[in-house]
Image 1 (cartoon, helix red, strand yellow):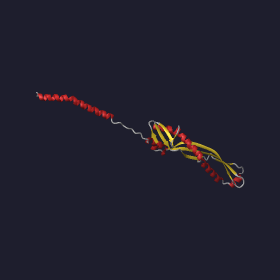
Image 2 (cartoon, one colour):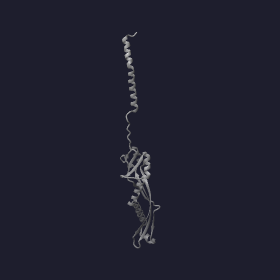
Image 3 (cartoon, helix red, strand yellow):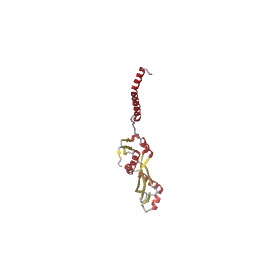
Length: 209
């Protein structure tokens, strides 16, 4: 039979048991709560994916312009002047080089992505030799045949026709139209990639869709 002192000690130990259980449960519950909630996760958006996908497109054609014009030439030779008429037909292609874009060209907000694009350029300008014709206006074929080297003349005329496609007037038209077409051709593609509204800029000027 236990002594009175031993009995009292057991009563004391049993009286502390609920407190110990409560403390243990509190510690376990706190551990689970801390584990499930954890610290706040900060997500930083990067532009790398957007830039990489644009660069993968390479040079993107924004315009294909067919040019037709008539040029007349007059060649002074001994005797009557010899006149020539050239009907020029060619094609100019305007494009934009997306490989020139880097991360600094992309600025992202909550629901809008601003992308600064390189200026459009003429990536192709060529005379259509099958549709470009040279006609002699004078009705004196014997004189002109004797006085003019037809092969040399034809080569010079084609050189003039090619330089005509490179003149500033046609170049400006092609670049301006390419800039406009970026809003209708490139903007929907980029919005699909970004899954956000895209605002395009060329040298700080916004491109309207």
